[in-house]
Picture 1 (tube, helix red, strand yellow):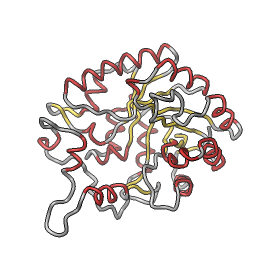
Picture 2 (tube, one colour):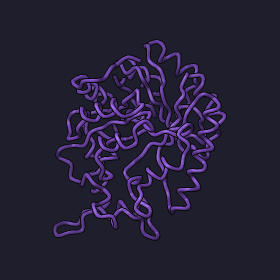
Picture 3 (cartoon, one colour):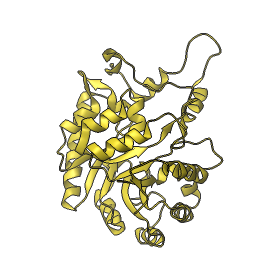
Picture 4 (cartoon, helix red, strand yellow):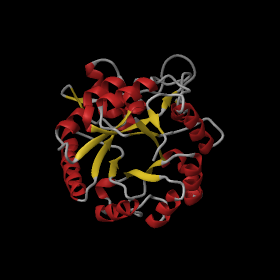
Amino acid sequence: MLKVGLILYSVRDMMAQDPLGTVDAVAKLGYKSIEVCNHNALQDSGCGFGIPAPDLKAKLDAYGSRVISAHVEPLLQADLDQVIAYEQILGNRNIVFPMGRFATYDDLMGQIEQFNAIGRRLHQEGMQLLYHNHYHEFRTYQGKAILDIIAENTDPDYVGLELDTFWTMRGGRDPVEVLRHFGKRIKLVHQKDFAWDAMVPINLIGIHPEDREPREGWSLAAFEEAFIPRGPGPHIDRETFQRRHTAAFTEIGQGIMPIQSIIDAASAYTDAQYIILEQDSTRMENQLVSIERSMESFRRFRGISWEG
């Protein structure tokens, strides 16, 4: 039975305006398992919005909610001792590396050494490091996917995976098969949905092996630029493309992802206890309405729980 959680990235605009008020609203909706999201870790070793750990814990305790994980960006440059101290007050044991950027194979392998070192340090504190994927980890070096290289070259006692099934699908892979493939290395699952009326491709990498291998000078921005349509008709500029890209996200159960099959596979193959909603973008009137809609839809699926 997977417990449903929410990453606060889903309500990041509201957090920027009123952090504790937003946490209150989220907990009041009934989200018991919270993943904080700190994209400001060089200035704030906590949740990224200046909330002292005791205040955040007290707010969540009032509703029977708790922090079960934390995204920390940039983790490799953050003050790890301060991050650990903050999360231990919350009772959280999962620290997530949110997004890798690998310019070369050697760069990837160098960062993997850092993952092992950070994971070892966290393990000493009864915590664990998890790597969260996007689509580009399904690009390959010499025919092997980056996410496989990470898994094969990190110690499973120190480094696990938080599999984002949406980005897995957009990396041209079947999320159900990838859940089976990585199995017990997966400790948490991120879930969103892909809009049925999206105007951008599902697969952002390509089908042929040669499409998946990075070329010299490759960068994530340049790779995304390649998907801006250049065919007949009106020219699509990057701003229009980005607007269409964000509109590809939709609330749980409103799109085309096989969410019940994902829940079943996560329960059958992985060590994940939580399936966490991450709403990157919404067409609804505000982010709170969006996560409430997803909560309503989540309740239609089997094999999940709302317990904290």
